[in-house]
Image (cartoon, rainbow, N blue to C red; front, top):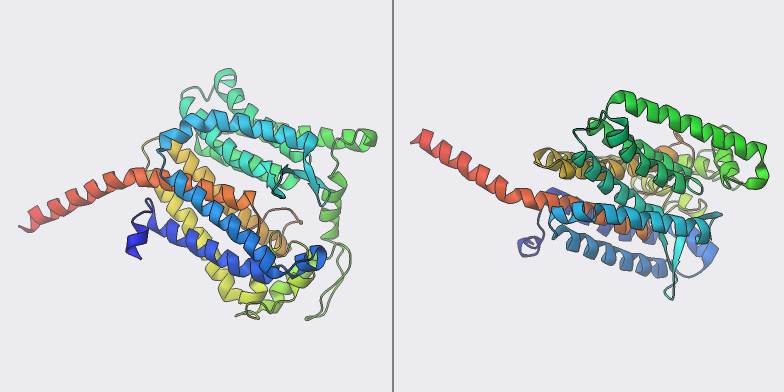
Length: 401
């Protein structure tokens, strides 16, 4: 095993957790796609093979990225942001619609799709990290510090929100956390929050007043998801509800039926009735088959992943690297937490899947690219860490002598 790991630089614990989750995603996807087979045809093996290709691409991207110098990502931050803007604008006008939302870019000839917002999330984190590190001395200035940093956040979230409110809200929240960690004055952050809420309220009023404009084409969907949380049918312990808008209740029932140890791989019921059981409702399908014990293990893996990233961020001597690693760690954990909250009924239904585990292409690839960036920064720290350990050993030997 060591002869393979010698090619993987950076944090060994992060590599182990990432590889475990990627490998387990193959098992879970194969088990959680019955509803997809019913709706679109094919066999579970067809979707397993497709996911296997994505896993291969994602791991290859993570491996290639982790070999780059971290300075490379700082230089690419602005270019990545511009590319993200271009992709989001293209999606706005020419996006392929899936489940009524035009979030995807269809890749010609291969029949695959790419979600532009997945790339935009990572690009924005890199660009914010670069701006915060460059403008650390002028953050109190509205003109030189605040607005140049705020503008990218507003633009990216504004382009995403039309078809994906949950992602826009999550990106906005993560951006605020990065700004707080980057020592942006709290008063300015509070003004941004207040301004954002007021602006969104105005947009809703315009949409309701002049529906012909259709400025928020998915507003009714968002409204229904919130209202449906409080309008569910009561069901028996082992009964699966098959009515409109009952996905969240079925997900909760699946978690309840999982018990302590779960029903076992492949034996769950919720995946046969809940759309997106392999993505948006991944946690419910997982807990039903692997139980409370499996849920605790999964939560611990994500928390350990975040903890290791925080360690890497704090060890870095460059602000860009610190903000980048923290942003990526918070992004991954936020996606996992939102998926869990939706499946347990704490939050309304959204479109956030489990990072590194759920079936999907662009989300999986970009999550691995993000981890690759973290490992690139961690790998740069290793020589210095080895020197520190040598000095400690030498010092101990002197005292013992």
